[in-house]
Image 1 (spheres, rainbow, N blue to C red):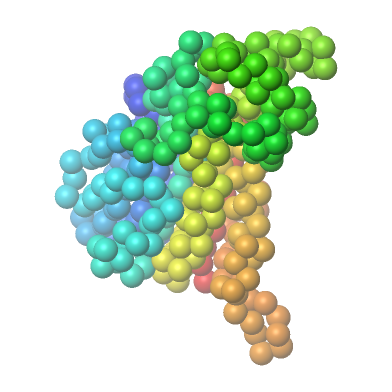
Image 2 (cartoon, rainbow, N blue to C red):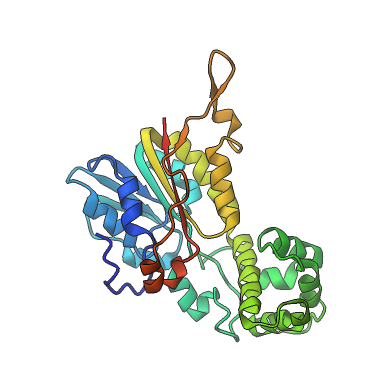
Amino acid sequence: MCDFETEITYHLPVLCTEAIKALISNPNGVYVDATMGGAGHTQAILEALGPQGILYSLDRDPDAVANAPKDSRCTFIATNFRHIAQWMAYYGVEHVDGILADLGVSSHHFDTAERGFSFRYEDALPDMRMNNRSGITAAEILNTYSEEALADIFYYYGELRDARKIASLIVGKPSEERNYRRLSEIIESIAPTLPSNTQQRRRKLSQLFQALRIEVNDELGALRSLLASSQRLLAPEGRIVVLTYHSLEDRIVKDWAKGKENREEIAYSVYGVPKNPIEPLTRKPIVPSEGEIRLNSRARSAKMRVYKIN
């Protein structure tokens, strides 16, 4: 299970051993991998399941279909995980024993130029759609959103303090093609306001790309929908394992677990004290070891949180 020495071209699963150990409480139960991707976690779950175990693996990316395991215990569903409740109802599943959600972007997306997730490909037009068959692209956002709308996206989703300046530079020359080279030039043009170091400029670009990707895919809205549905889907003692990669995602998960985003779901004791049914099983987030980060540098920002439904 979770052999990191094995070559995986699509995506190397992060915190795989820890995630499967936290997820599986009943080997013959029903589980959901909400983000199949390269099927690394999916394969590891199947290895941990017994002969009566059942797994539903979800992914909205058409490229992921080819990775679905040929295992009678596993059903692949081509969908956004925000629709998990509807699909479980379709298959007649009332409750599941565990849900795993790895919110990271697959290496396949970063390493495929036409998917438009990486600024390494300077001539590429920004796409960033997880499902590249529908929805608005990052290029369309850059070319059609107002300066104010772009500034809000960069500030709230990218946590860029100079969001308004960046937005004004983007819309300032409407005749120019807004590809990755242009975005890089914009970041470099405000270099005097940054430490004179390439690492800081790369971080600024990463924040800009994060903001666009979140907007394109409505990632935070989808996460909130997944968490709300998970609370209703999980059987008593059922577990949810979530891997986040930036503070916005992690904050949403923590707030949900504390009942800040699901007040209507919380019961009250006879004394009027809230009884939150969500119990954290990890006092602090679990993070990758130095050895795993050496093998997979994209795991460095991962945080894993585990919760149980009482």
